[in-house]
Amino acid sequence: VKGRVTTIFTSRGCPYPCTYCASSNVQGKQIRRRTAENVVQELTQLVSHYRINGFYICDDLVTGDPDWIMEFCRSLASSGLGLIWACQSRVDTLDGEMLREMKKSGCVQIDFGVESGSDKTLRTMKKSTTVQAARQTFAMTKKVGVRSCATFIVGFQGETEQDMEDTFRF
Image (cartoon, one colour):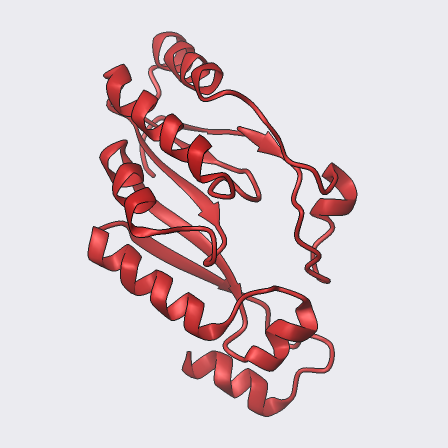
């Protein structure tokens, strides 16, 4: 997202036990979410006062509640603000309908914490996802026309050279 952009938070907390992440310890396992209306009101003020044209949602799990993200996207689309935006997500919390609504509301990129191309390493990390889930989500994201980005952790405790090679190939 380029131009006059800002970052926002729409929620705090993460219920996942990923061993490499402190988020659930720092912010709690329970997700506390602002209302979609409240977030759109904040964005309206940011457009009015600072002339932003885009934003990045910094939440750990913005797509964790399908009803909320759908309501947010529809509210944002109907607001007429015309903003572009990006966010972070897990590969196992999206579906095609959600992606289409996100795109309609201005979402241009989703950054996924894939972490590894090795299912063994993902299990060690307690990531609760698979390499196949990542492949499917990236294919679905591409089909909808939203850019995707993956982040990885290389050299995780217990990871073998083969596991790292699997990640590089992935």
